Image (cartoon, rainbow, N blue to C red):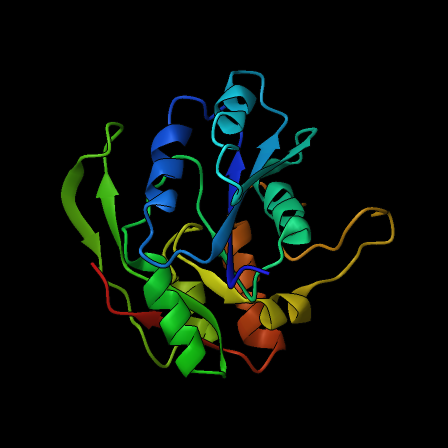
Length: 210
């Protein structure tokens, strides 16, 4: 079993997916799997994804389009890691990101969600000189609701047991549990972080970053 799973939801992401996957495969912490969820793409996303399966750490889940929340849920269902991170198919991870979160979660058993700041980039991957430096400690539901220090859906690495505590299955769902609410078409990540803060005892903390 890998220590960490990285879930990459991808919908018509053929143009950006290679850079995303290259950044994940370049992580300094090496004990991970990557699960690409092709969410009903109509472009060459699937071809690009299969081009990376020469690396045994990379696997693909294909499904009819369910939206970002649904793609993340399918990735969670297929994942095996103790820790589960999320990286959208047009985002990049810095080489030491996974290592920082694994250390943080290893050293802080009460933390269910670890995150970091982010740097904004343009369509070519160049930094814009704008960084998000969020609050890292003492994060409450009010902070998430007002400012969302987690920042974006590619910043979080979560403990599997925290995901398990969030999971539920709607009456009409026959295949797998939901962690992210698939009725949301935006802000599904903020809703998930709020639910973690309000309905569980898990702590939400960030690590110093950008």
